Image (cartoon, rainbow, N blue to C red; front, side, top):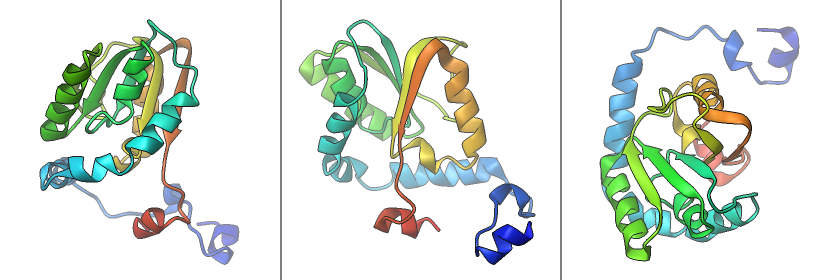
Length: 175
């Protein structure tokens, strides 16, 4: 760790020697946590923010859009309403089922697949846009997630992420 980061009271995560971790075990635990209870109830409280997020993006009819860690479809559904051909991907099958039900109820062009943000199940350069809102930020290896999102983007495509601010209450809880 550099002297500057120590004096600032912050460590660069790449400079910290972390113990060996079992990523598969971490991912199983994360999936179980997202499958427990009914996150759909919580998701409803941020659906307005998701709609506003999409409204501020250059989503156009016919574009292929991937929503990573899509959960119940809070971001995918508004994008499909704008005419995008939407694919959502998430590790929690119960949340995907809720997303499918929501899209079907509105007759929207959206599909929802089980998958891991660290190993997206899509061919390179498959999407015009990739979004994620309060989802991909939970993956254990953020650089791998960013690399995967870039891999599936077509040249000239765009990526939009909404993440918690570290100074916010939820962001502070993740420290």
